[in-house]
Image 1 (cartoon, rainbow, N blue to C red):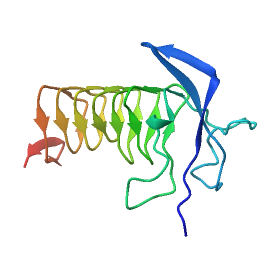
Image 2 (image 1 turned 90 degrees about the horizontal axis):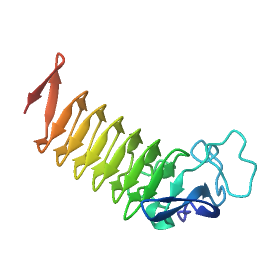
Image 3 (image 1 turned 45 degrees about the vertical axis):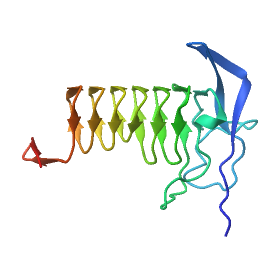
Image 4 (image 1 turned 120 degrees about the horizontal axis):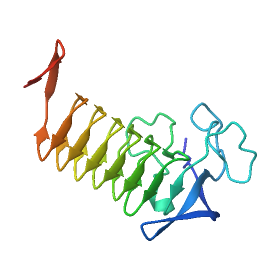
Length: 177
């Protein structure tokens, strides 16, 4: 069975300017297979009542249209209505961006970025954070991370100019392995 790519569409009649970049509204071009992963997203040219509108993206090159993972879930790359993605950013298949601005970043498979500004980083499951020049490869919540690489869980923390890896949690405290 051949893989079917998800097809996206950028509406050039619905554009905004951000930092000298022209961004267009993101839609699915069509729903190739309607399932739990595609039925809730806006489709260009259709009645989108009750569907989640896409955000603003500079180029279709910013959105992955096929899985980069050996475990495709059927999920798609998506940028919500309150988000902006531009520069060299790539939102990988299975990643979702919510209420965020993503600039020159690689948002990896199975990432969920919420209420964040992300720049020059790779992320996974980041919430309410500002991230600069860093890689976060697991859950980071309500944190400001600068020039650092974080792996595993970091919650309610501020991390600056440091690398935190291989952390285990024991009775509410982090222990370096």
